[in-house]
Image (cartoon, rainbow, N blue to C red):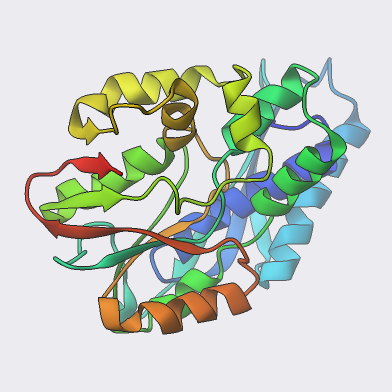
Amino acid sequence: MPVVDDPYVFGRIAATNALSDVYAMGGRPIFALAIVGMPVDRIAVEDVQQILAGGASVCAEAGVPIAGGHSIDSAEPIYGLVALGLVHPDHVRRNRDAQDGDVLILTKGLGVGVFSAALKQGRLDDAGYAAMVEATTKLNAVGADLAKIEAVHAITDVTGFGLLGHLLEVCRGSGLSAELSWADTPLLAGALALAKAGVRTGASARNWASYGEAVRPPPDASEAVLDLLCDPQTSGGLLVAIAPGAVAGVLEQVRAAGFGQAATIGRLHSGPAIVTVR
C-alpha cells in the first residue's frame, strides 16, 4: 500500500522493501516478479506506469531483472515484488542464530511510520519528506557482504513490527535477552519532535499491545519514545548481531556502504527473551 503520494517514489520504496528480505538473509537477488493490484477505474494508466517505472529503477540499481509478474483489478492500489535470490549455505544469516555477548548494530534511523503519518496529516516538511524517501529507497545490499563475515551471527530487517518487535524475534529465536540503549538508537531527523507532538501510527499501538509484556522500558519513558521503538518501518534498516571484537570493523564497513546513521544500540546476553531499554 502506498506510504507516499508520488507514484514513482511509491514504486521505488515498495521494490526496495521487497528486495530487503533477500539481503537480510545474506543473499543477493537474482530476479523478481512484479505483483500489481490497481483500481483500474480510479487510477490513471500513467500513474500505474510510474509505479512500475519506480520499481524497475530500483531493480536496475540492484542488477535484478523483472522477469514477469501478475496484475489484477483491486479495490486498493497494491504493488510489490516477489524477489528470488541466491546465497551460499555457509553465508545464510537468520534471526535465530545470535550468540551470548553479541553487540547489536542498527543501520538506518527509525521514524518512517511517524513520517508517513505526518505526511498524511500535512505535517511533514520538505526536509522530512526527503529524509524519509532517502531512507526507504536505500537498498540493504550490504547485508550480503556482512553475511560473509564469520563474526556476524544474525541479521534481520526492521519492518512492520518495529525495532522492539524484530529484536524480540531475535531474542526468542536465539534464547537470549537484550539490553537496548535508547540514547544510542538512531532516528530520522525530526522524528522525535513529531512523536512528541502526537504524530503516531495505529500500528505502533498495536505492536506494543502484542509484545509490550516482554519489554522493560525505563520508568520515565515517554509515550513518544515507546512509539518510536514500536514504529513500523517500511524498508527499514538491518539489525545485526556481531561478536564484540568485530564491531568496529563491521560498523566502518556499513557506514562506508552509505549508512551514515548506523550505530551500536545494545547487546545480547543469556536470560529470558525480554528486551530491557536503558
